[in-house]
Length: 183
Length: 50
Image (cartoon, rainbow over all chains, first blue to last red):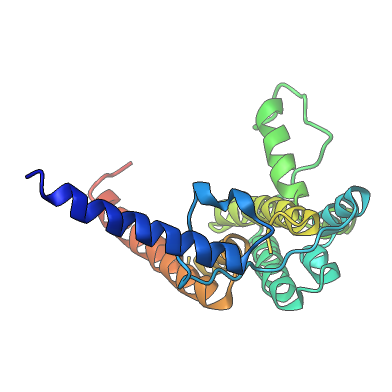
């Protein structure tokens, strides 16, 4: 680098900086701290609008999202998402029952001849119960007994678990939307 | 397997992406990943008797 380059380059850079700061000041005079992350005047960032509910109401939305798949997003006015999510979870749940998958209850089988250990059955109950009211209704109606001799028994169980676990994710998503953390 | 993959990819796409276009592209990509992984793993496991 020769010494003659510096006097030519420095005024140009400082002139650009001055122009940018003038533009920034004209566009947003009430935001003096934007100098740490300068934004190009050509770049237009449109924030996606979010709205936050009071925290107790957000918890109520999350609870409703757990009890009825898709209800949380429906209460937040996102009915297309609600239909897609409810359709996915409930179709997995119904198909799991149709494939003779077993629903596990919270009363654990402690007999020594039990095929499932207590800790594992707790995890299975946690997965199944994620569907909410459909799980309790199916248990109440005596569905989900499971037929071990059927080939589809194992697949059905996995469908039921995944339906419940997905609904937990949906519940957390509804809570985040209700709190205004995501659009 | 297809129905399972479709349902799971739909939920993943809806809760992780914001705009419908992003959701569609991500959902299709995850669906194809699911199906591709199942087919590839199925062929890999084919010679094993257990």
